[in-house]
Structure formats: structure tokens, C-alpha cells
Image (cartoon, rainbow, N blue to C red; front, top):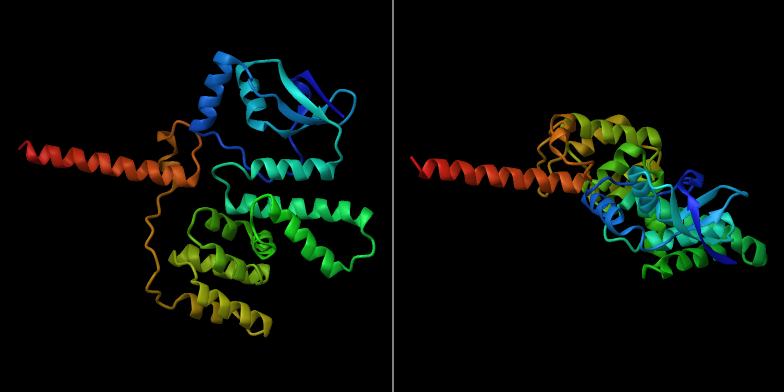
Length: 282
């Protein structure tokens, strides 16, 4: 059953454990301006929790924009859905966005797989666990044209410690070596991250494969991690590390890491041109 109605903003709840991060970026500023001038053109999608409260499935940014503008109600499409059904819709709709972080995709795929497995458990009791898992992974990737193996590899990222997963989102660790690191214990991952903090060096794919193998053999010690991480890598990128608290005041709103990098690069280019003009004017 689906209905279209106006619901008070105060009665809307964010989707529990939403894997997609809310960003206060330029697009959000533009959304606020659009709603201020034109109102909410596309209703958000919600499901009822009780007689008064609703959970947002799609439209968190529109709802937040209305809160900022002091708008009391918002048009909503109310769908009668189970938690698992709502999860599948949430993931499929949000994965269509232009920019989705690896961590967002990883947690979203895991949530969708769990939801589909819960639904399948009620309708396909004859399937073996392994067959059911393969079929579920295929179903998860179908909407986004990704293979079941790609889906399972993304889900592996959910086994990473938050510090390493953040490096993946920032592009400092590539997807493939990150998957290999996910097989290490939490303690071993902290050892790898500690080396990064001290030396600002990230592991290559071949290094992560070796660490994974040593872990499986029970031979991955702190000394072995340090030894592997200390190896010179021809393709190791140099990074300029600037404490974010020193530059955050220059951003209009909370940019993503990628947007901050682009902002700083453009600022440096602009200042460089200014210095060249100053030199030529002498």
C-alpha cells in the first residue's frame, strides 16, 4: 500500500544504521536554495513506524534542508514495508548517486545482502547455505551491474578497522590491497595503520598478499609487518600532510576529502599565478 501525504518534519526519523554519509557540500547548499525558492518538488519516501512517526528511506537531504529552513511539513510517499524491504530500496536508490565512497558501498552491500538473506530464509528453506550466499551476492550486484565476486569483495571492506577504511575512502589505499588487508586480525591491521601514521607509507598489493599469507600461516608478527611495510616501492605516492583544523575554516561547508584536495590544489595554482604576475611586474 502506498499513499501520498504531508508529514511533519519532527515526526521523521533517519533510517537506522544508514550506511550513506550525510555531506554538507555545495550540492546541499544548492538544494537548500532550491527548496527555499520552489519548495520540495519531489516527495521523499518513508515507511510508517507507528501511528505518528515515520522512517526516511529516500530523501534525508531534502528533509534536513527543510529543517534548516524552518519548514514544518514535507510531502511524503508512505510505503508499507518491512525493515528488510526498506533496506533494499534504500541501498538501490542511494547507489545511483554520482559519488559513493567505498565504505558506503561496502556497508550498503552488506546491509542489502543481509536483508535479502532474511527474506530468502522465509521462502527458500531448501537451499544450502553456500548456494544461498552465492545467489544473494548475485542479486545484490544485479541493480548496479556488478558481479557477485565484486560484491563480496566490497563486503570484505567492512572487516577493516575504521582508520584503514578511511584511508581507502581518501584514495590512499587502493581497493584491491584493502581487500587483502581485511583478512588480517584487528590487531595486525592496527600494526599496519601504526606504520602508516609514523612513516606515511601504505602497503602495495603484493605486500598485502604476503601479509595475508603469513597471517594464514600464523607467522605474521609485528616485526614481519614492519619489515614488509619498510620496503621501498617504486609506485609509492608522496603525500603532503596538513592538519585539517588548520584549513577547515576556509571551507564554506564540510567538504569531502576529495573536494578538500581539489580546493587546496586550485588555491595553490591561483597563488602560484599571483606570484608569477608579481614577478613579471617588477
